[in-house]
Length: 155
Length: 155
Length: 155
Image 1 (cartoon, rainbow over the protein chains, first blue to last red):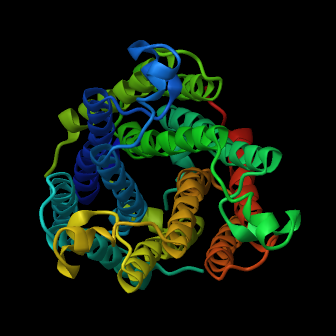
Image 2: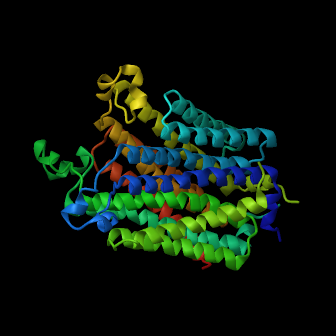
Image 3: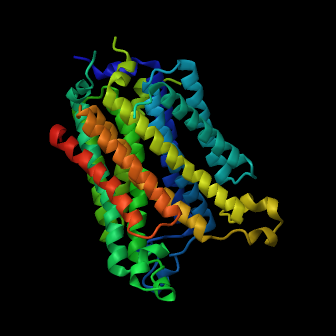
């Protein structure tokens, strides 16, 4: 019988596992950032969340939107929209037997670009910082998709 | 040649497959919940969706937002934000050869916490029910990420 | 040692890899569509994005929402909500040793339904075009989840 741990003896797969874990952990940090701004700015989406701040009409004034909170939420959604394709395409690409140094270059560029995207979005840095970070991550994912389809197309 | 079905002879991987399928099916149920509230409350986001309720200005009054529908949509988005990291990190963790009982404890806690999160969000239950459910799922995912990086870091 | 490339000798897995890469690339196209409508209609969510169109109050008028942009964003979010379960359940289903022609039928129906969903959402086509496309994709994913749990349940 084949042990699954052999998957983890493959260097490309180990690298994919490490970079993916880092970028997903970074994405999870966005939830904490949203919670932090909601609590410090007293901006809530649900009546039960601000029940501790007062009763009835008094609590309702905390049910509002705030520029800072909406910014973090947009950054979080942009992460989801871009990390989900990386997760799927990157996993399949890693299993298709790519060259190790090429694969690691893809993973590093993607993770670096997404971390820079978050910094550019939350600071915020002037454009084109954020749009460049977005397009680097986007290009890396398409490059993996292209290599995968070129060598393994089966429809 | 190695048969892929050997992956499914690994108990950790089989457990991951079962719990993941359950939690993803639960997430898909949120789409049906949104559709249910949209139809029973006649609250729509697209003009073509309420064309059957009248013509022109008469139909436009159904293009609105509703507290109940927005609540389900927030619960759905929160699911996405938390189940995507579980999917990626959990898959890689399952392949890294963890102890079976430790792995199953992680999966059970996560799936239980996310189901409780949905109940707490949709009822709604008073806080800190929902926030606790959120943090249990969050902690489980970070625990798997930590174990994965500790034993398999390759950058 | 077992080479990972043997995974890619499995026809079901190769087919899953191809269809998934296509449907994830289609989802990524939604980001470009949003960017296209934001630029051509001058509708932005962040002050730094429209800094090039003028200073101070002059730029602020571009911070607004637009029906067309919101429609693309809803289509994108619906993609995320449906493609994430397909990614997870489809991967596990592919590894569970299904019949090749059954598996390919599932993948083709899902990818076709999601492409048609996007066309129906963006045109927009009258209902029930979009709702039918949604339910075909939804049914395919549940069918894979059912087959997976029936043969591999391990709790």
